[in-house]
Length: 230
Image 1 (cartoon, helix red, strand yellow):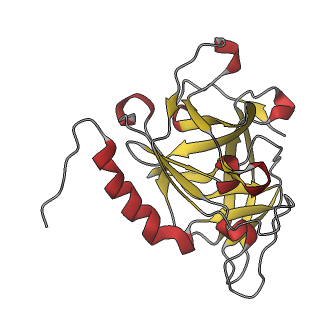
Image 2 (cartoon, one colour; image 1 turned 90 degrees about the vertical axis):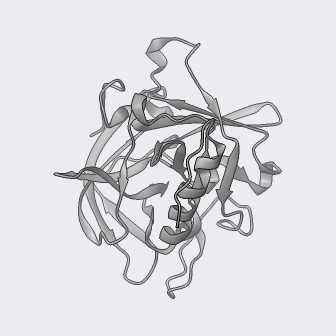
Image 3 (cartoon, helix red, strand yellow; image 1 turned 135 degrees about the vertical axis):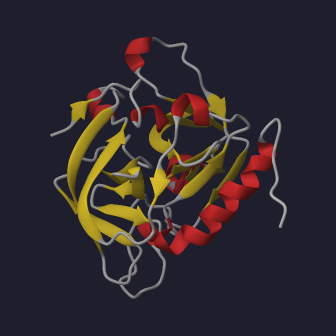
């Protein structure tokens, strides 16, 4: 059963509430910081073909709690890397290929870029591409609980050669979309995937290379970017 957590405690400080707006109508989801200015979420949190494509406005609230009042700090995404074809027919139902080819929930992942370095104030999650099964946790902002920051535990199993996890024991509701599914060990909280649907978690494996490349390149959006010399 889901329980409310203290958003001021790490790693929950690094979980974000996302509000995407199309034609003045707002929809919410979840995500997590995975770098200084990098937010991992689900593509469908920011993109919807039936509503016209990419949201007109995307606000990211780190360490959000509705009990703290209406005026809370948010940041606008300044760059997006996402898949627009996770739901080709636009019916709102995502499938998985079952044939080792990326489709549906396997593509439901996005990386949003901020122009602020939040590392010292929120921290961020690590990531793991090789996880296959085990106990996991999920944090997000489900509407069922009035967008409160909620935590639950369960079990995830990689679906063979396909790029998603099936889950058991995790309570996932609308608003959890894009939220981090992770484990915690001596290295700290480590994301293995993001919430796509109540039964499918998009795995990081097939997206590993482009995510790492984007995290490195996205430092250029920071006020005082640093560059490594190769």
